[in-house]
Length: 75
Ligand SMILES: C[S@@+](CC[C@H](N)C(=O)[O-])C[C@H]1O[C@@H](n2cnc3c(N)ncnc32)[C@H](O)[C@@H]1O
Image 1 (cartoon, helix red, strand yellow):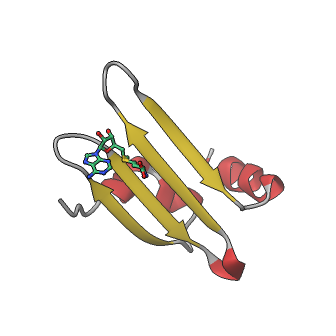
Image 2 (tube, rainbow, N blue to C red; image 1 turned 120 degrees about the vertical axis):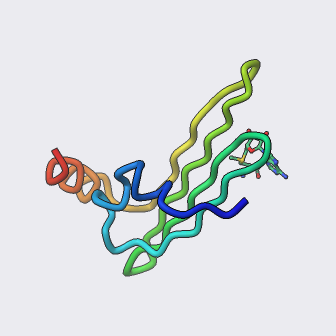
């Protein structure tokens, strides 16, 4: 199932406004979002909500200083 606006609802669009986004809501559950940023930067988030092994992963090559600045700007 392709979804629209999940990204905006999450607020990630405000933290990383330049990202080109591809996101997917799995059936019956699960969510993935991949974002490409200028200068070859990226981030990816995966949500696995199964009761017996739920987790959320976040991976990015955006420098930590930039991430902190983006979070502070959002706060
Ligand atoms: C967010 S996806 C991430 C998958 C991960 N990128 C991988 O390659 O295994 C994982 C979640 O999606 C659900 N899901 C549903 N259909 C799936 C499918 N065809 N492939 C991978 N995950 C699926 C899983 O049950 C889990 O909750």
